[in-house]
Amino acid sequence: MAKHIFITGGVVSGLGKGITGSSLGVLLKNSGLKIFMQKFDPYLNIDPGTINPIEHGEVYVTDDGGETDLDLGHYERFIDVNLSKISSTSAGKIYYEALEKERNGKFGGKTVQVIPHITNEIKQRIYKAELESKADVVITEIGGTVGDIESQPFLEALRQVRMEQGKDNVMFIHVALLPYLKVSAEFKTKPIQHSVKELLSLGIQPDVIVARSETEFEKRLKDKISLLCSIPEENVISCPDSDSIYKVPLVLESGNLHKITARQLKLDLQETNLNDWKKLVNNIENSKEILEVHIVGKYVELSDAYLSVMESLKFAGYEINKKIKINWINARKLNKNNVKEQLANAKGILVPGGFGEEGVEGKILAAQYARENNIAYLGICLGMQVACIEFARNVLNLEDANTTELDPNTKNPIIDILHGKNRENIGGTLRLGRYITSIKENTLASELYKGKEAIERHRHRYEFNNDFRKQFEENGIIFSGLYLEKDLVEIIEYSKNDFFIAAQYHPEFTSRPNKPNPLFMGFINHINKK
Ligand code: GLN
Image (cartoon, rainbow, N blue to C red; front, side, top):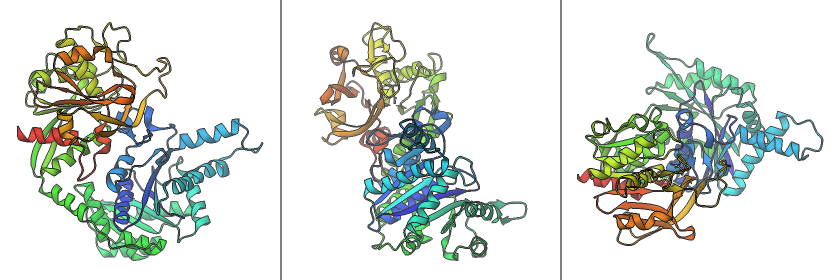
């Protein structure tokens, strides 16, 4: 049987529950344990796939094609375990499945209620994660803040799991804000006390409090929180703001969070080996010199919309001790008149993925600017599609070249739906998750992937139209990566430029600290040499 750790949040959201859980995962994994992580989100969308990225940040995609919350990206980057669809559950999904059962008569005529029917669905997911992952420890983060109406069924389910499995098998870590009042120059413990009271009213006594504060606080406050929240003093852990999330595992190690966890859950820990992690933090500290990258995106108002892309760029930067500065260019505002001025100093242009019409013409202009001025270009998903459209329009002179996502009647559908799906029904027709890309020898792609195949994740509906392949090849485009089984284009590069490469897949989802994805590493190395 696996041990369970439940992470709840107190006082305000955005304190880094995900980072806390992931950091504990790092400590336990590097002490010899097998870790799995999952997130429960209290919102009613079935999954985040349809939420606007400007509202909720990026949709993170797992190997098995789950469209999940961006926190899963943090989990994977920290614990370096490939998670799956079961790692991401929204309240919407829980209710949807329960109501489906109700319609199919699975509840045998009973009145269907939040307790026990919804809470049972939640519990099943907890036990399913344990069974399917075969992990020693399952860490579960509960989205939102204790006290939210939506999170109550989740907390009730967790209370029941603790009651069923006991304190030796189930642990609660409460991550809560310890605010500092400048006027009176003191930290205030009252909000933490109130949020613990709220948990207690739901029948949950937390075992550990991770107090999130702006700066270190004195031991006296630990004693106070300990006394008023009925928690041993050593189980009150200080986690002050850090200039990099990747330093948090080391902060929690010094607070002994892994040892406290092991003691309560009766886990055997080997000596914790954080050498890789220390190397990463060392690289981060040594990365002072700035390297600039221009990202031409349409969700630039919220950088979380491109979280994995940003982290991937950072990881590549750390490898060569460079700090990445991103210049955000709003694709919706980019036009023929301002493109030159907006991209004038660009050494590297990255065009990330996107859906829908807005900003596409701006991205096409960015790809054209990069190609014509021999500026390093990395296109991701839509970023590959726009590079192809641009090439068709301006090099092959196919003036109305387009993707059928934008212009279903174009005579030159360079990008089109090719895999036999019904165009009317756009829900559930995406190519999602992991596919293997075979890479052509003697290409930039094969140099970057060191002759190996690229195993990468996808999230898109449209593909390069093979009817145009020959024309492209005759004019300098190399189709250097293919998904052979269906003969789909996965990577294109432009042979006449020094670094111009774009992929139909999302390389950002497989970048890890100390192991940046090859496309990002190549891009950053190239800019660095310029
Ligand atoms: N909208 C494009 C498609 O569906 C690209 C998707 C993406 O960039 N993730 O194919």
